[in-house]
Length: 139
Image 1 (cartoon, helix red, strand yellow):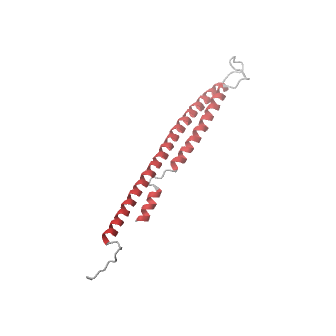
Image 2: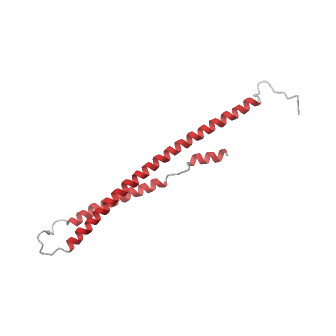
Image 3: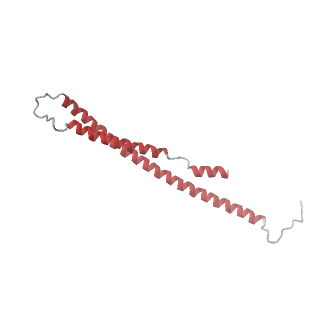
């Protein structure tokens, strides 16, 4: 073991180098934790938006389905009317057509909202991507 180690004046000692490495590692860990928190918050926000969109879209599509069912009932009633019925006026839009138009519009709107919700749900990344990549680099 060499006894005559000479340290130049102004050169940092072993303790200060190890201390600097430890400080850098602590800073890096804190930054990684903050990055993970930020990414998890972003993914949670995306999850809330997707869930809300799916819920609203499902409700609107459900209402559209109900109106389409009403339309079918009125269509059946209209098809079975006698030509001499007094409550049938060929100049007016039949009631079933009104239900059908409203039901169709609601079903289309619900489908669009559901599609957007599914697209937003597809953007959600459970393990945060940046945190995972930076942890791989560190390791």
